[in-house]
Length: 134
Image 1: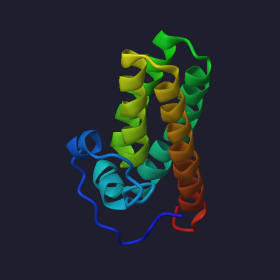
Image 2: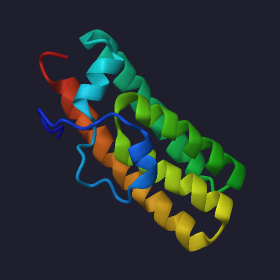
Image 3: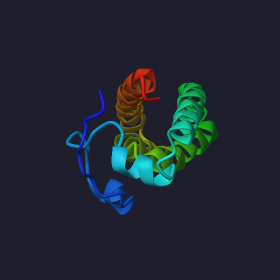
């Protein structure tokens, strides 16, 4: 569930410098509102697109092909930042880095973290889209 009223800075540089972002909500509501100009219909459309795109990118990541993993992780970084899904962005950055550095353990851990963050965000988005105001 999305935490109401939680104020989190939308500075994406924080995603690069922190470890696990478990203290942040799945979706930064204030950032999402800014990015969609407070337009509920636009927000709904952007969230629906994100859910579809993230599912496709996770499928590509699961393919295990290094080029596909790096490209999909990079795509997720930008998409997640766009909606304020900082945990997904951070996990995707770690996966992108692990993919470049090599090491099956690091890659596997990063994929596990990314999948967990994606599941949480998808659930939060589903709950948000089910709200009567959306």
